[in-house]
Length: 477
Image (cartoon, rainbow, N blue to C red; front, side, top):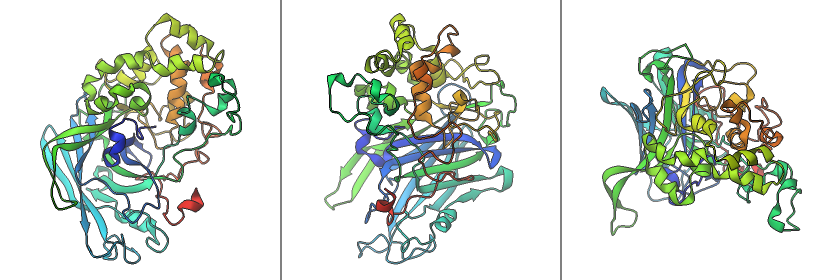
């Protein structure tokens, strides 16, 4: 969660494991879209001497569908190259790194950015530097400076594009320990059936525990003018404009064959690239796709997601909640017995929400069922009454209208599965009180953007906070 170690095979390949995807109109440039794709889950800040980096043998892609067919019309490709400048030391750096060009930094990484669209292939930049990992006060004494030096721009002003690739603080927050201990949601654990067990210690820790606190990720971030992503080449300002909604997902691919040479560490990759990871909506593969199908799902294109629609229409977790919490979700239990498909979840996750369901809001992309983040670029960034619960918190600038870095997507999607969004398609349905109270227990309120137990979000590109220092890792934990 969001997509950390979500499938058996990709959990063994962290450099290709897409963990989170964000897409939103940039609050610092509202005519631009910022997209952030995170990889390498749960990085320990003190992970030396071989600190984390992107895979040189992985093709990372950010995909944009602007006509609703679940196929990318625009793709941004990122390919990385690593270099050891001094092979005779075991050290990542042999002195303070004051600039990203310093020779004291021994293991450095650069990348290229390529745009692929109907007009062809355009290399936007190559040899672009990543910053080092945040080692500590002696190795990286001015990390904000190093991070700024790694922001690259193409063009200028409102027509320019920015890119960044490197380590950031994990911005996603979730109580993994509670969720995967047989759905022991801390706010309701006193009501759990406990499977007849006693002496489990339930109730000793009612507050949520942020499982992703004080860890880092590697982020690929790009900020692009809206008009370069839409099918019309303009920035629509009418929410109902059929060209206003973009579908966005990220993928990672590896070449089909690998030959291990006799020389240790020297391998030869060849053949076409094969997709091994993807991510659109948070939690989709994690919570909705069965264990035996998760890696297969990672290999598929969103245009074929109708094959997974039954998992959305009848989610396993919706059936489990009334069983795990007897008497807490009676209305959801009654709905489950009808066998009616969850049209609310099908819309939110696979087609977008059509006009007329939520006043003044829509992000429908058409009939093709596809797991994509759907961003209506005609909806301006929210500047007041911001809610980390997004649309269900009365804030149309947040999830499921794209996803901002601070949106509490775990709470949002758990509430939706618990029935909070069923009245959107069935006005006669009354959600259980618990459906609106399900929470990770990590925030004190829907607009509490400073006490989320997360990591120093930035008001400008690349928005995710500075990575945690390896030297301070144990102190921070």
